[in-house]
Image (cartoon, rainbow, N blue to C red; front, side):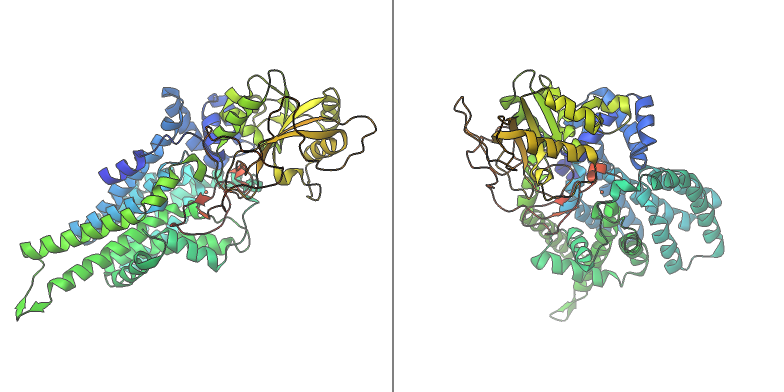
Length: 573
C-alpha cells in the first residue's frame, strides 16, 4: 500500500486537466439540485461519483484534491489485492500480488485521474475479498457486506455489473454447496434490483458512448499488454508464463481467472452488437492478473526450493533459501518498475493526457483582448473556459445562450442558427477556438448550429492570425483570429493567416488535443509559441493510448495514453 500511495502521489499536480477531468471538476462544484438536474439528461452513470466529488471539492477545489480520491482508492485496491492473495495462497503470494498491482502502469495512470475508475476497482477488489470470506464462513449473514459493496460499486459505475458473472464462475469452479449458491443468489438479486433503475435511465443516454466501436482481437492484445507490468519484451512474456503456471494453483485461479476474463469477455461480446467496451471500463479486472501472476511466482519459488544440490534438498522453509528467493523477487519487481519509469514520467505530464485545457486557457489569455468575442467549434471546446475561466473571463462567448449550470448541461446551450448568424453579423472580428477538423468544409456535420458556425466563418470572415501550441497531436486545436472579409472579396475557404499588423507572429505549431476526438496530449502552458504556416504540424507522432459508461465528450474522449514503453493501442477517450 505504501508503494501504491507513493506512486499515486508522485507528480499528482501535473499542471493541467484534460476533458473528462474538467467535467468532474466543474460538475462537482455545482449545487446538488443542479447536479440532479444534469443527471436527468446526461451522465446518470456518473451520478454517485459526482455527488461524492461535490463533497470532496467542498473542502478545497483544486486539481490535486480532484485526484486524491483516486490515489486513495488505488492504494486501497493494492492492499485488498494483497489481502486476497494472503487468504488464497499465503503471505508471500499476497505481498507479491499487491506489489504487482501497484507497479503496473495502467494502475498508476488511473490512480491520478479525476474519474471514478480507480474507485470502482477498489469496490470490486473489496467485493471479491468479501465473496471469499462468505464462502469460507458459510453463514447467511456473511452475504450482507458482500451485497452492499457490490451494489455501491455498480451504482458508482454500472459497467461493474459483469463482476457478478465473474463471481458466479468462481463459485462454480470452487464447487461450493447449495447453501452458498443460495446466499450469493439472494445478494446478486438484490444488487440487480437496486441497479436496474440506473441502467434504465442510462439507456436513454446511450448517445454518450456512440463513439465506441466493436472491439476486435487487437483490443484483446492491447488489454493483455496493459494488464502486464511491462507491455513488451521479457517482462510481458514472463508475465504470461507465470500466469500459465498460476493456473495450477486451483483455489487462487478459481478467483483470479474469472475476475480477469469474464468482465472483459462479457463487455467485448455485447459490444459486437452494441459497443460499450473500453479498457478503462474493466480496470477492475486487472486485480485478477496480479493475483494469477503472483500465484505462478509462488509456485515457481516452491519448486526451486525442492531442487537438489550435491544430494541435499534445499527447502523453502530454510532461512537462507527463503531470503534468497525473497531478494530475487524484490529485485525482479524493482527492475520491472525501473524499466517503466519513462512511462510513469511521461504520464505525469499534462502533455501526455488526451488534452490539456490549461494550455488552451494560457494561450487565450496571451492573445485575446478584453471584450473580444470568442466562438467555440465545436461547443464541447467550452470545457476549457469552464475548467480554466481565467483565460476567457475578459472575453464574451458570442454563441452562448444559457450557461452550463443553469441549463443542466455539460457545456451550456447555444443560440439557434438564425440568432447565431445575427450575432456574428454584428462583429468585425472573432476569436475561434476549434479543432482543425471541425473547420474542414468537406466534413459532414449533423448539428445545424455547428454547420452555421463553419459556414458563416467561411463565407463572411477570413483568417488573420492562427496560434497553436507545439504538440504531438492528430487533430490540432487552433486559436484563430477571424476578421470580416472586405466587400467584394469572394470567400476562398480556409484562408491562410496573414501577418498581423502589430507584427506578431501567427505562431502555428502542432496543437492542443481536445475532448471529442482521438489525439495526443498538450504541452505545458509555458511552452513558447512557434512560428509556422497554418496546417503545418510540428512535433512528433502522437503516442498510442489505452485506457472509460458515459463520458460525453468522451465521444472520443480520454484515451489511456502511454509513452512508447507502454502498450501501443489507439483510442477513444
